Length: 158
Image 1 (tube, rainbow, N blue to C red):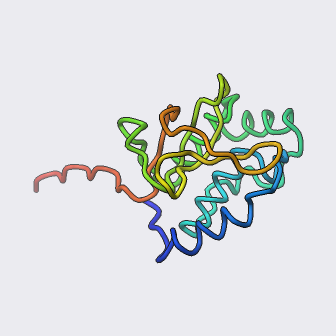
Image 2: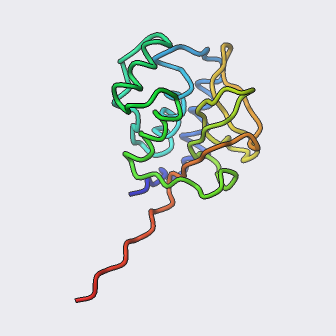
């Protein structure tokens, strides 16, 4: 089931979230790229998609161990895909179909990181050592919609 966006998600909730986090530096386990993206999804929808990861690590090694324990994988992509799948988010057939507020994985100079599509629709926003950073939307490699319902299954005839 998709995660419906709150009323005024863009002009109120998401905008305030971005303002509040603009200068907050990267921190493993509280403000890393995956938790930032999950926190953005929560600001937009009210649903915490990353509850399995919260308060479980404070270092990069701890993050990797938590990802392995929760997903069986070893990357931020595994963590984000797990959270998206668990909450019924539909992956876009083409990553550049992502729209404002959607959950994404982006190639940042050869490193895959999590983020969300910025309100301007032309950038992805994620964390950095000094605060939030805008990155080119053209570098998105995977994207999940918060509000596109999964295709319905055909009903069996009686």
